[in-house]
Length: 310
Image (tube, rainbow, N blue to C red):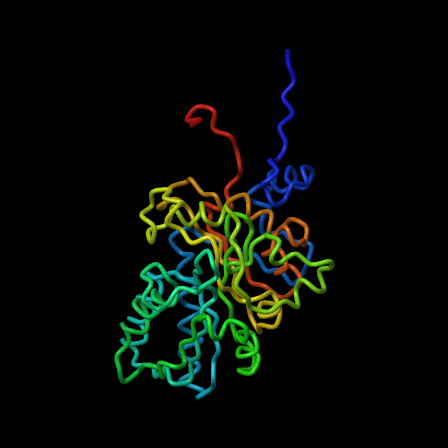
């Protein structure tokens, strides 16, 4: 009998085989157990997960009006959720005057030029289409209170967030290579120490090839693996923005159009339960108070299926 020594490929960001085996073996019943008391993990039914994030968003929007307080939110890109949030705001006639939204990230071309608001696959474009334009005009926040990345503001983006008192909330979720926002495990971010790493502000940076592959499966690029259509760079908040935020809700629930196929099942375990390291950018959330919401599908055991197989 011959031997077969499978090891992670050179392009895999995190290669510690002992840690990979350990987190791969974490059962669904144990995934909420964490040695750090600041990491709060809850598993929700797949049908409930979006409602958990939507409820948190709506409560913060409602309180900003009720208590007449400024609220700064750093937002990801779940378009369908924003339509529902806008519907609820309109239904309950909540005034959004005190809200300020920063986009978490945005696409950039091969030369580092940030996509304009008109780019249909862009995150600012999505937020304006699915949220801002859906609000009753009398309830909308000033248009200047929605801030996306541009070539002009990227170098001062983190400073702008700081001057606004830092984010009250960031909604995040790990990408296939372990990214947080578009903070990928690439040379653009690596530092000599974790202390230096988490102090980095927003920037334009290259994306890991796995991020490009992940996004080629999303609707914005046709659900078709068309990797050539996905930008190779992005603009994104920095680790300092994440560490300085007052609250973080990290949501893990991405599957392939609602099936059991989910690239996020393994990387979720790595980012939540693996070592805190620069090869797993989202692992820095273990260093701060973080609410982690996981769907049952992502929490499910990782087991080979040699019958369905391919």
